[in-house]
Image (cartoon, rainbow, N blue to C red):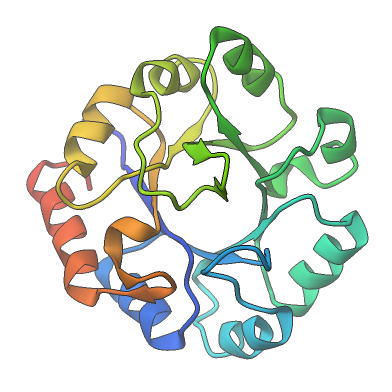
Length: 210
């Protein structure tokens, strides 16, 4: 029997999109608390949004080089389950957080990047793509070969250019614990396309990955 592939729908800014993702089968909902992102949601707005979500859903806050006190405060106020670090956070700094509730994003370009990633103290690695102008959410596919190497050593969520058309191929090529999607299921940044979300889960189910 194949392992259950988890799915995170990230970059959510609206309650209706979060509920649509849950209804379709999302395991995690992701919220970006980085003002430089077009998918940014401020903590006050996020607190009001998460108060309207069912208790069962797992909520991930995405932080970029944020202060540890801000992360802890926001996680409590917004009822977040996981802090995803998406900046230049070091292993020593991250170790001060709760590792079982911490994910760390990496942009793998070389085997040296892979070694650094697999040693990081986090419950999950998020293998993503990036450009000099952006941190994730670029719609650009990451290196699936390096991602597959990481997946053989650590639990990973695969991100970077995943959409309903390539999700099955990505899962089969990399064998991650899950897929992390933002732009691949959007109408515009921060606004999700509910039909694309449903199409994603339909294709994963047809491929017997869910």
